[in-house]
Length: 439
Picture 1 (cartoon, helix red, strand yellow):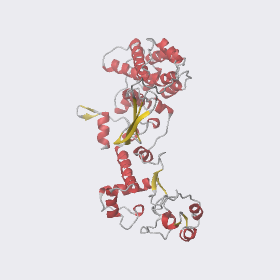
Picture 2 (cartoon, helix red, strand yellow):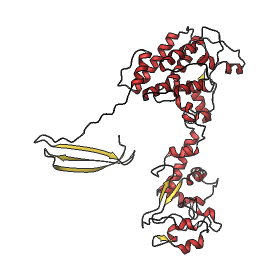
Picture 3 (cartoon, helix red, strand yellow):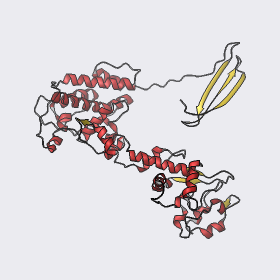
Picture 4 (tube, rainbow, N blue to C red):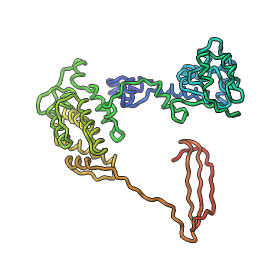
């Protein structure tokens, strides 16, 4: 399946798959870790299997009752071992049980959870510290309580000495008839989320400010991906085509002879130098021959007077890289002559499109120098406006309504209040509306 997805991503040419410039494992890293933000299908499946285990452990469902009756009649689920002769769904849940259980902690209410196998102390299952506890031991926490507090004699009798002080000092807010509650440690509200499960199972890379800086929601994927490939030398330039047994080529876009490699195309070549110098001058950034990753870092670290300027300093180099590559390909394969004027215009066009998308309420200048001056002067204005309820004119009545959701999606409801010209309440109502979203 992973191979099929990779083939689709890189594409096909005349019934032959194109060269895969990077492995799917590298592509599936997060933006700031050097990937392109996609998620591996197996990681998604694993996170959903962990969700199945969470539902099985934390909720009372017919499906969960069936699994307990079939596989856990005598033993606690945590103590069960993998058996290949059991159902496929159960085996997948058992494989990921260890990951899920390390992130589940139990909040004691009535003490109906397992004393030995459920992690309520925060130290893992207490059975792992004992040799006398078997998988058939179903002792509840409530059996160690007297009047809602710990039975110290019983605790000292059965629990290893090192754990006794921790247990006796563990606070209990005893609530009879209320089942113990499972808490997912990785979220603030204690509820399970697939994204938090994915975060603990996925392969992680080294974070870098440059990796994250080339991606933005207002930049098309193709532009950011081209910069991603340029930073990793994953483009069909001399460094790569010579390894395929082809002869090195000269740069097609420069007026002066130069090698068709990453450094020449994007930084040190005569054509690239002209473009970078033009846009760097207005930004007050010195352009010289440094590696492309250091060039991006220099722009990103440039001092800024506004958040708009900071955004432009971060994304303009990515737009320049994109248009330099387009010009190179047009000259090499499209029989077009290189033109610094055309490339400057296209870079300015892409930049204004970016700014119009991010800040549609601002009319931007139509030349680069004036545009950058506008960007420097942009300031966020905070307006204070009084909002108050106004009485209706007599004999009219005013009805105010609103609705909300407890979670998104979740239980939803609505309500309203009817008042007269003196502000007196005539009628009020509230009604549950079932399950939905807050949109």
